[in-house]
Length: 186
Image (cartoon, rainbow, N blue to C red; front, side, top):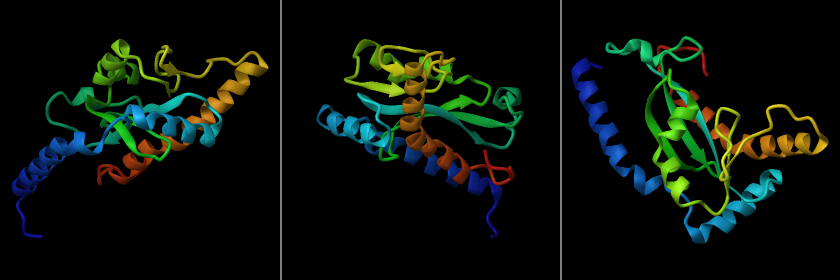
């Protein structure tokens, strides 16, 4: 298109910075007045009571960076940024963390997030559903690693059903915006 690579890089950086400044206006956690409606939607989605969100990380593929390249290699051997997303029953992203290289584990990203710090001190009125990579906390529900009883199996089924639809938000985003030089989707 006749545009120098440096110019494209500067425009992408400026646009990314502008979008980051607007993030808090568009990515917001439900207010106290919205929590009851969010819980109802999650219950209708998969029968899991008291759910106010789902949390998971997804890898967004990137080209290998020039500095500290090894930190960006994920467990599948690809270069990525590990992005933590929290979603609601309407597939809206209510919280995100986009700053960790692909080699960083989901649990560490979670432990070092503002969301974790905030909810450790100010417990939310409800729970977030997460996969087994996350810690079990009073406000984070994970599946049983091994379901040994019918009630544990039922819980895991309801947990998985409720978590699956909003969880696909992150997978959708990651496959839509992957690095063009990386052909296979996540």
